[in-house]
Image (tube, rainbow, N blue to C red; front, side, top):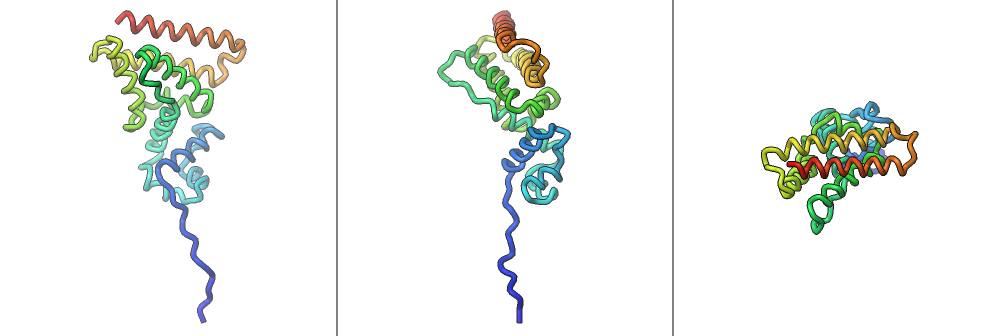
Length: 187
């Protein structure tokens, strides 16, 4: 007589989005150092090997985290002028840094390599060209502006400015935005 033990549980279904979401949650809780294939797999209830169907390796997982962080930045309204859209993207970056302070420095350490991650960068390049920055110069200007904005946002999120009142930090942010405007207008 066969013993009926009931239905065999199906493995949990995951996809790339679930893997990246889990990796972001792990990083938010324990920092980038806590992100391993094993830890992300455990969080999802699967083996680390199951992740390799969705990410090639840890480097791909980290590139996916860059993608997730940039996806977290809302796209600005299309009805705004290009300068306002750039400012909105900057504000979105700043808000993302404050939501994900342990993960955000990854944007300073890794380039945007996935198609999804490059969308925000490409939007900034397109807006710069719309403002009048020559096409040959726009990628360089984007790199410089992004580095300034990312650096400020990462510094704020890490607590570097914690000894200043919020009004001073906001005034510094406004000053940085003015520097960006002046940089763009001189092109």
